[in-house]
Image 1: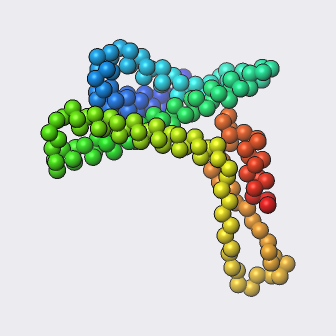
Image 2: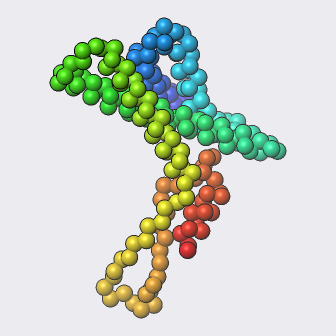
Image 3: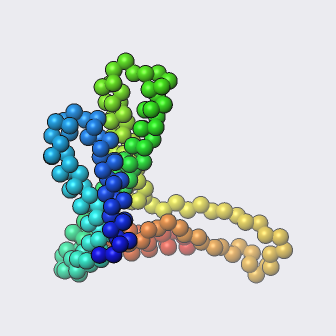
Amino acid sequence: MSLRFIIFLSIFALINIYAFSRIITRWQWAKDHLVIAWLFVLLIFMLELLAPIGDRLFLPKLKDLPGMTWLYVSANWVSYTVFGMVTLLAAYGIVTDVVSVVWKFIAPPTEAVDMERRVLLTLGVLTVGSTVLGIGQAHAEPKVKEVKVPIKDLPESFEGFRIAQVSDLHVGPTIGRRFTQTVVDRGTL
């Protein structure tokens, strides 16, 4: 195992610990059941690593087995969705921590429990909402934006010439050939 990989894994683990500690410290059930809560965090961490590590070790072999493509695609979707959720949770956790500190100085809450409950609810709604929105956008038809570019002294042979520019497809285990073909077809209309 390379030093780079160990450093990456350590930073990744710290991000997960930070993100989930924001929930565990604010949710009474999780505080009362710390072992179960942190075992759940470990499960989530392993799910996040399933696709990036599994794609290098064993998932491609699974894809090649007859009738198992669905399992390969599902494992990647679950892994990358969980990865996205934890990333959002960490980002929103930082924002809510900063806002909470500022808010406590501006207008201290009458009950600390009420503030923690609101922060937990905000984290949950933002994280789940953004994840659902992201999955929806990943499955949506690509957007085509036509832009006319006037060019002075353009040779007549190029009049009506069209160029298609495609970006951010993220083709891989979750975005495959069919979606890519849809994008190509839409761009050549």
